[in-house]
Length: 122
Length: 226
Image (cartoon, each protein chain N blue to C red):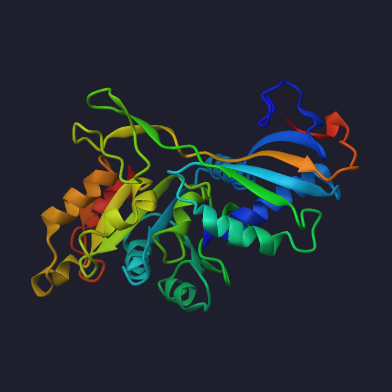
């Protein structure tokens, strides 16, 4: 259940940046090869935002699919299976996409003022 | 770039409240601390190894023997949800150990390791073993600042385990197959195990060992001393 600590980390990272400004929406990017279960993140999100400036925020999750390049035959292929096998049979592959774990964006609640841009480490 | 509309402003109105693009990695804080741990260890020429396996694979037994036989000063960070049993066993082998109890947590993270290292205060030139919580899922995601990841499996587990836990097994720099002294008594197919392992981790060296009898451990010590 590493999703619990990951989701707690999301709340901490956002409140570190935005202080107590109320947040209406959080958008995450969780790649399909990342090993993180989106349903578990959703379950944990409602628990860990309780009592914070994110309480009631909508959670949007973008899930990029997996893409890899075979080191043996150089082919690129798509796969969301964590056991990444190239059609040529090789498992010696470089993952190009699908491992993403990002906080993409947040939307402040209406009326909340944008923090000074110098406070936002972008 | 705005993740909603693709424009280049970092913050602007979007029907409702203002959208702010963050583009921050979920593991940024852990990875940042882990890189500090790695630098700190390098500065005092200490090597650290993250040992990951399911419960009961023999990690602690392996460490009890390793810290006695390796021939280098060693210390151990023990991760378990509860109890100090494992740290007590390591101390009984004659080396310092710090127990980290994760409570409800299922893995060690860089915050815990940094705190444990401060308490352990390993001497220059020594080796630190970090025995992660017995779990083949969660520990794989968290960089602890280690120099190498050791995945331990045993012949009393299924040969197909690498395929069942591909995320963690893929990250291993070396795989130890433990309890090979039990091979005559269990239906463990080594060839099938290797086939399964190679589908998720094509290159890590595989050492067949018995922490109980000492079989194969010379190669493990050589890998640690390389």
